[in-house]
Amino acid sequence: SHVSIADSVHNLVMIYITKEPFKQTLLFDVEHENKASDWSTRQAIILLEECVQLQMNSYGELHQSFASTLHLLGYCYLCERDTNQAVQFLNNALRIRRYVLNRFHPDVAETLFFLGVCHRVQAVDRKIDNGSSLDYLNYLSSSL
Image (cartoon, rainbow, N blue to C red; front, side, top):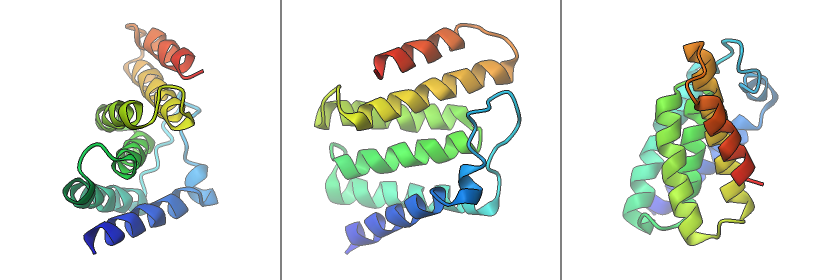
């Protein structure tokens, strides 16, 4: 079924991002251009975007698996340093996770954390602090 394919692709991407070469590209050192710009990350994004469509058609929008795929897609965009896309997908995942789970669930905290990282990366990339650092701290503190 389509949902099985989508779930399998989601799981394969999860395996990929836990591999050591990918983990080394994480952008917790936001001061440097260390984006994960190999073909595999872009391929993961393409596959996850297809998963989003399959899951939307199979599960509907208010489903934890759909939210998890949106979160993973946002995370991959963040690793590519495309923070605008990352924020869009992470915000959608957060909205669903807060509705389906509860605001104190660890998955909600994880999404809030990565939204905070997005805001910090945006501030560093712009070389100015136009409130993004404060947004970063607010996201991090609300994830506690």
